[in-house]
Length: 309
Image 1 (tube, rainbow, N blue to C red):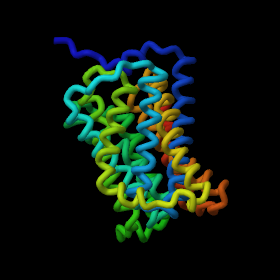
Image 2: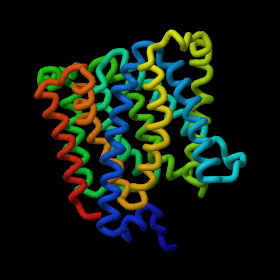
Image 3: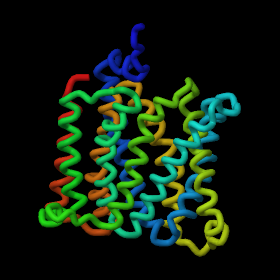
Image 4: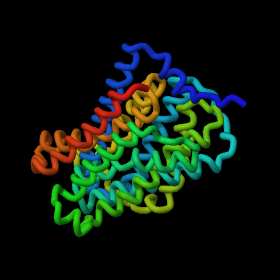
């Protein structure tokens, strides 16, 4: 039996040079928007605990995804087949988001963003048992180089800390969440049953919200929203709308024009954008040693981008 090529891979090989450039630009913007979720999320985490904050965000996200799926894309509403798929995916993404915001109570957005860049390498490892996919040597080299830069940022450019494996509490907490996200990525393809992508995303969001309800509903109900600064409301709106709706559309656009490995690799730009954003919003500029680690991750991405599809 002939093995069927994934739709995204088939289309990426047919895409013109201009379309591929558009895909790269879309993912460049995607990385910028994702970086904002760490910095703005850090602002919100100073005022609202992780569990109610994430429940608040996902309740709004559910509304946004419903508007996208059943309003903008006019998909028919129907009960999903095999709903356990969405329970698994929703649980993984809920754990990822919870650990991210708990970690931000202990460490900086730059460090959490650096831990996030380990996700593509972990996803490549999960892709073999989950999907039977093997990573090409050149792509693997880019992943390893970028991961090395991420490790340098995680340890704050301190060689002694690397040698003694002095990892902060926040980084360790978020690393558990990144493992969940890394497994989530190949499982999306494994659990695909031909649903409209936006409808699929809507049910994942609903499931994640269901997982967050027991741990966040009591504190969220007791929250005095009028007493929260405007920056918290803006941060939650950014997380619910920008990192959901706009990022989702950019990701879909790029996925139809670029190979999955190159799409995933743009996550390596996250620490560089976080460093830039943290400096611009007045949180201080990171040290040259840490910035050098972020530059190495960007070089790893450049290596993968230059490789033929």
